[in-house]
Amino acid sequence: MTPRAAVFGSWISSPPKARSRACLEPVLAKGSSRLSRILLIDDTPEIAELLTFALRDHGHEVFSEGYTDTVNDLIRQFRADAVVLDCTAFDMSESLFDIVRHHPHHAELPIVIISDTPEKADAVLGSRNAQKVLLIPKPFTGSQIARALDDLLR
Image (cartoon, rainbow, N blue to C red):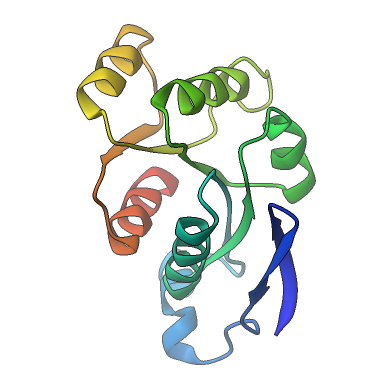
């Protein structure tokens, strides 16, 4: 296993790249020769680790980071195809969403927001006519997040 992503100063180890046909099936079905790159911003290291492995199992390459306002730099550095935001307070996810959407190169980037206050989040996103964004209420599963990403990346 090779280190791939720092979360709060510790490294999450990546499994080796998928080589079996079954692991690559989601990628091949999309007609792509590479995995989708997902930037995961999560302020809870344990959840970040679980989501990272779940998304990798569903055919995504994942870079995980704790809450940071340098999200646009990370998107550029990692060449992310989509972003998953899971912050304890929706206000934190909302602020990161705004940072991403106000960047001219990231305005159309697909975003999944995980929220424990889906009514508030839905109202906020609705008032902004947010495009290419899906809201997932807590509790959630890794499969739900993977399906949401697959829907957005089509």
